[in-house]
Length: 273
Ligand SMILES: C[S@@+](CC[C@H](N)C(=O)[O-])C[C@H]1O[C@@H](n2cnc3c(N)ncnc32)[C@H](O)[C@@H]1O
Figure 1 (tube, rainbow, N blue to C red):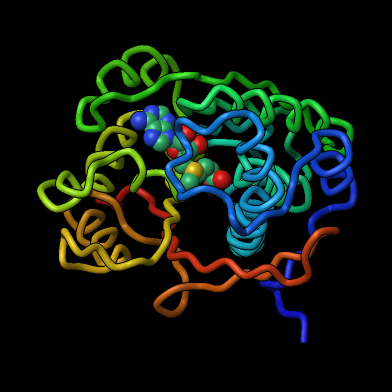
Figure 2: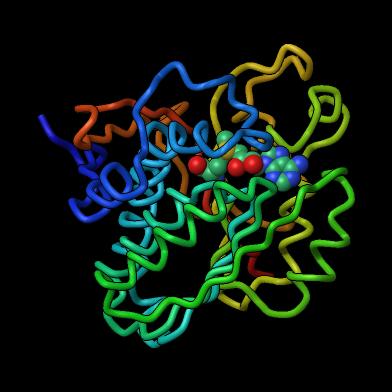
């Protein structure tokens, strides 16, 4: 029985990634440390994991904008930052949700950071193609940066964050890859990223964090608890989250029916004083 979490990849996107960009669907993709993957590995990522991130983000933001449409009614421009965007399934899912829900939007600016250049190249191609199907204009800038020390984002802050404010900052399934297991135990990367992004949010700005829900043997805790502990130490409130322990999304495309993706996600806003 289809539910709001059963999502079909739009036909234009399905055609574009599988026919034009030669994406492949392969569950046997390498272990998920994507930073150093070569172009053919990224084609596998594009056909296997990109549709999942699309579905997660489209599902999350469709619900969010339907409930909070009034907050965005007068907004004609939005600026988005994606930390660890990879091929950017979550960005395309987000702009598809914007396209369906915010009819007054005229321009969306996207800043997308990742250390894998092949992924960024695919993202740029998909963003350019997506313009044909949107009622607003998109301007995008990819930020090809390999972060050597996650707990020193001062370069990112000075070079890209400080220059503008963001209405929506997102990070999907990336933070775990940026830190070593030991760093996950000793410090909280979610709190660190939130506190880094916070000064650069617009008045109505939100952060959306989504991640896998595995158990960390090193931190002796489940990732969703680590995320919540991180959020609780910041001046941000959770205004929207997955209902149960994790949320399941089903994505159907030309190479797979009902592929399953399970994530924990939170949307955060600054606490009102
Ligand atoms: C699992 S992928 C998620 C990508 C995308 N957000 C998605 O949901 O499909 C993690 C991403 O983090 C990037 N990444 C990991 N460590 C990094 C680092 N130290 N500096 C820059 N990017 C990094 C990888 O290149 C990869 O694209």
